[in-house]
Image (cartoon, rainbow, N blue to C red; front, side, top):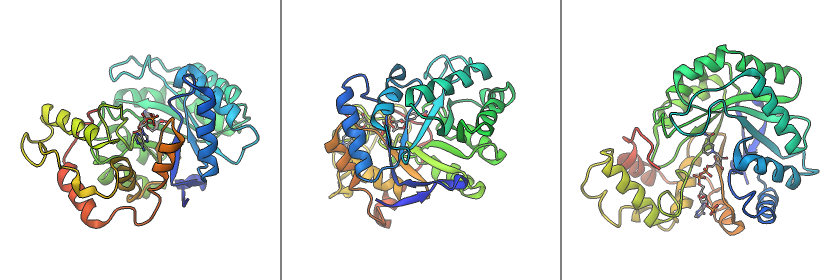
Length: 315
Ligand SMILES: NC(=O)c1ccc[n+]([C@@H]2O[C@H](COP(=O)([O-])OP(=O)(O)OC[C@H]3O[C@@H](n4cnc5c(N)ncnc54)[C@H](OP(=O)(O)O)[C@@H]3O)[C@@H](O)[C@H]2O)c1
């Protein structure tokens, strides 16, 4: 495992990190086994949220990470009614502080390493978050030592060109951002990532497999082709070869689709690529991607030619 600097936090994070969004309530024992396998493999950064699995993700992490204060945990407060793109903003400083306190209890920790505003999705609600006391409450938590570093994540399903992060990063308000970058949504490469480098903001990449389900996403040739078919149907890609060809992704061989997808992310100037899986086997497959230079220039160029123009995320 190689490690990278998480921007101005000065923390050193494994280039593959673990996304703990799924599986805690489905099969807690298995969840804990995957987390421990991730740590054994050198992963030292885990992403969760107060809202994941109704708090079960944090609770199970509290159990899995007992005695492992060396493992860094990032968690979040969502100031919206739900994760849906159009959900109403309901953030308040009181709710933010209560959420952080709850996270500390569930995680059984006395401080949160990185605390994010979760899924900030419009410029209007970013402005509200910055001015209604929520941001000040985050800073207070940091001053009190309950939180070490602060940031926000975006909601790329509704903000494919990262308007929110492009506005937020240059303000200097945040130490870390969570941003989507993957083969089928490359827009951050020329926008958010250079800004983060300029302002020394840590970059945690989310959705490297495009938040895959079994049907669609960067987890198999069939699921990746389905994702491309959805882009064609949405008018984001032309309805013609090579996009309509079953061998569209053949140039990525011998890599599997998920391995190529993770290599694609790691070939960029990011702090860490956060990927979730509920399987130790698939975790091990994902760990094969940590091998510089990750992806050769020919495949990177082809991926840019094919998908670099996509401006909207399709799941
Ligand atoms: N707005 C936000 O703040 C936000 C939004 C989305 C995600 N996130 C964070 O980012 C993390 C990563 O994103 P994500 O998990 O949603 O999406 P992702 O990493 O793009 O995809 C994860 C999915 O891919 C499957 N998978 C993983 N490795 C695989 C492999 N080698 N082969 C086949 N399938 C594989 C997993 O299924 P199995 O579990 O069945 O292996 C899981 O369903 C999340 O865990 C979460 O912590 C944050």
